[in-house]
Length: 223
Ligand SMILES: [Zn+2]
Image (cartoon, rainbow, N blue to C red; front, side):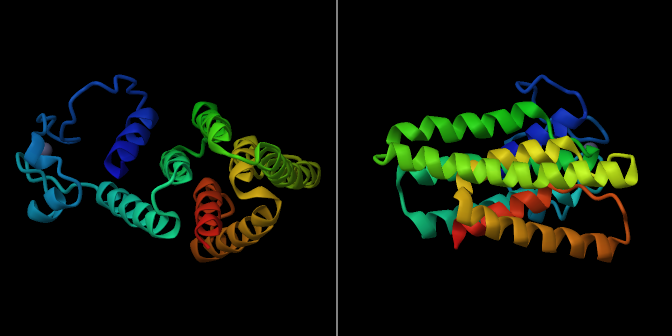
């Protein structure tokens, strides 16, 4: 899944919409075979270089594979096999794709945010307490998006330009469905602290918030 998410995000940013296409080297264009595409292992065995032209393979690919592997394992240890494990693993995949796209191009495409909302809605079917599921999800979603939308509007009025994106607000609505009201409070706090730290360390005014929203959400779902 890590490898798949990486591929979806990579091709989305490069406007390459043919998902059926075989993977090839970014530099020499050589079509990769099965032994070049084993997640993590191929990267280690090839010492991070293309088998055909020797170019360095971007580390983001192997890091994404490792990230998904570790997070998937943690979710399995936390929840065991149940329908909601699959709901959350699909969410983690969507969050990974959104974060990778945001890191590269500062956008959070609606189609992936909508897939997250759809995924949450489908699992209403497996929930015994349907009213509770709906109530908790919608309060979380409204709380997270409305709170940040206010911040977005005030920043806009103060600085007279967009300091944060509307994409963040939509993504917060989506993840709020999963974390509920109380979880949303924790996730927002955590996400903002991580985001501010990154702004401080990177000394940049503009940083993509998607990855921090994703990390805050994953953390809250795991504790
Ligand atoms: Zn190559």
